[in-house]
Length: 339
Image (cartoon, rainbow, N blue to C red; front, side, top):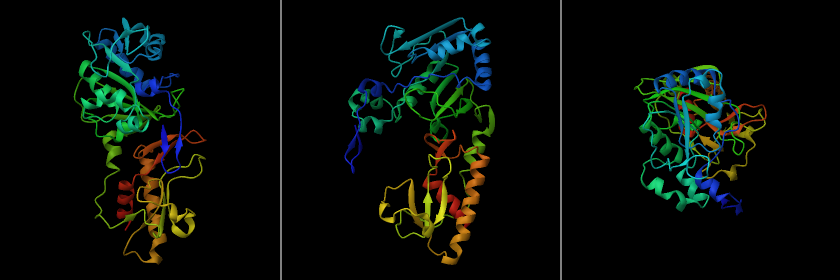
């Protein structure tokens, strides 16, 4: 698999594993108090029927059956998989049979369309993307699950919160800070969908309540007039570290160009993590104040949203905190609000 065209870097991948988008859960941290309460009510509604259409090693079903509260409610727990002898064979990316309207609890495959091309498995998954408007296998899986069940609990990428996927049945979202998978550090979210259309969803990080999804997304909005701000300008007077460092000490920040220390000749039009930017019309003497205000507003947004207003980036830092990335759209709104 080509990982850097410029540096001619490649790595070997497990074609079967990658094409299936399979990452198996190895821990039970996903079953928080809030998720357990949701499943209690869902299992009552479904008469105790439970289904995992992407069952894999069966860890999710076993976790629920072993739970002191939920285990007593499970009348029947079944699963499907696309291969192997443990479960009935079914391609759940095509359709999910569920005549009992069982509660679906699943960890669907993760694989974006563009990643499939980069990893050389495009032809193995092309049939799924050809029949869908979705650009990631987990979204195709989620559509099928919601079509066949009244209640769905899915362990999916945390980026779902900021995606355009319809969330009108989303009741609860729990961000899991701990690593759930043995073979990837993909930031995970437990999304709980009910059968009724809802106006909003409650969001937690672990057991901590953050607020509602609408409240979090509102923090990305701004009524400030749009300003001319030029990103990826090697001669810009403001540096932007748009990603939290892995050391747990270096966080996202706006920095005076003279103090940034990042090689300006490394900035290209596609730079997204470290760059320089220019704000025309702002006098040199006013740049420090603009930077100070922007960092203060960024800190406030992060604190008020429990950091969920920013997309996750490559797992956790050395202190165990989820790393985040500041997209340029939000960076522009922050700077515009401070001008």
